[in-house]
Image 1 (cartoon, rainbow, N blue to C red):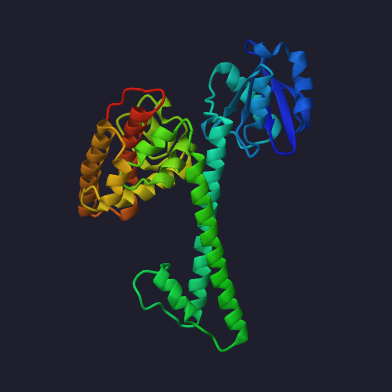
Image 2 (image 1 turned 180 degrees about the horizontal axis):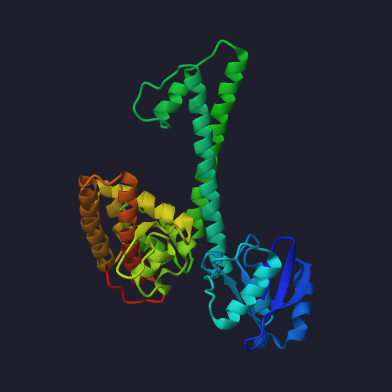
Length: 365
């Protein structure tokens, strides 16, 4: 049982029984040295290894599994913590992990295949590019605002907006150079996002979850890029046997501190995958409009089975009504979107199970 950092590995062993775990030692982050440390503990099939998820990815788990070891990666947010424990070190953590693993108190995370991980890395690279483009656009708009220049049109970052930018000039040479650099930075970011979007769409061809991605595009607010992001972050959505488990995995369920007859619920837990939670919350914003199947939605649904289209239409009817009712009650828009996103996760589960290679029979929420 290990506590992994990018510099070294702390190793502890918990033998069968109730004896406290013992510290084996600390070594540099090197797989070959770790294997030598594990050799005296027994045959690979008889050693159960766990370590806390961190910045080092899945490389160590895959190498140990290839050698025959049973290796699991543990979600840090799901590790039980003692209320009075205020000291956290790598040595104490690895001892605690060993004892909890022996007691069966740890929950392992889902580990993607290398092909799945490659799609996820590409999706996150596009997300980083979009964030960089947003910063570049804000910098350009801030420059214009400092010079009291405002766009007379309604919608920015269109072709018309770009032609309007080309008409601007500044008397001071320094200001003109700065303005041009800001414009070039935005153009470079636009080109980067376009390249990554195209690469992402090409990368899913032949992917084992390609059918799930196509099916999720039937849902309102979920285009191809969003669907790829959801599937690459969550993985096999059909592994959840109930939509509520997917909602909990995404951190969209309310936190709760209840005792006896008192039930106290607070804000959402925000546990689990933040990328997928953000994508669902953004998609929920589209349900503020009345239910309809537009031209783009029709094109995305052309080759999909009738069962998938029926689930998507049911989602529209239910979620648009839910959005309108919450808004009429005066609930803030952020909370409305979160509530709708939580229910949308259930329809995502139903659509994914309907199209998943595992072919679980879904029951729409």
